[in-house]
Length: 77
Length: 321
Image (cartoon, rainbow over all chains, first blue to last red; front, side):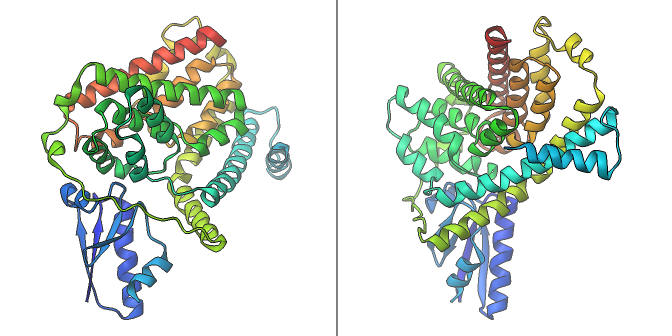
């Protein structure tokens, strides 16, 4: 099972990103574990300065805005 | 080139709604229809075009470029890049920490954060198309100057002691810089996403701005502005800045108000001071920055900007009005 971490200080785009991933995962029938990371030290530890960022299994795959639906589908495949 | 929007407003206000061009309501409705259609049209086109051609300019990249430069190079770079780098205001905190962590001085970091909400390429183009290139250029010059002056003042007063202690302890991981997708299809997709995101975020500010602008345009007589907002009234610029501080809008949303005020003969320095103060200082931004700045620094920061806006507004009035 893939673990997604959504990096962000709790802004609207971060919540939207988490919702989008959950929605796409359900649609694809993939089981995922989604975790929201709001601690600034931990976020910066991944080298992210512009949120929201997305980490899959400890690898940073995206930063600086909402990912597109197509990107999310790629991550879940 | 934009006469089509005037004609559209003529038709909608005078033919369709049967309002009289001489009535106050007719005047206000005409302004509203013309500015709403024009601004949303321009906004969509410009955001799409910029999204399509933009090579990915990210805060991570700016950090790398500015770090380690001399003061004389880093201040102009910080405000210039602050004006064109897109980032959501919710990213102010990680951006602030990331800059300091890279050894970028506090003054330079604050200069970036001051310039960023005030100037952006979309607002500048809409401003130019609505009220003319001269005003747009002056606004950019004013915004960049205030950013540099504000940053230099923070450096001069050595305010690092008023940054929250935990900020200095955070260590950043290796920044992974995103590669932009460059195929035609990917660019189209990205540009369209940008339109949805930016228009989705600021449409309400624009609508409120046009509503207020239309009210000013139609219902407040020119004599009122001549009496209270002329160059001779030394309180006009400070009052404009004070009014703008609690108000917040995206810079593009202020443009219809600028349009209406200039139309009423309010001096340019006063109008630009109001626009800067609405776009740059806001309560939500202060609350976000409170996570990394102590209250003393936030108060000093607001005070410095207050003085800088008045200075720039007064100077422009003296030179141009």
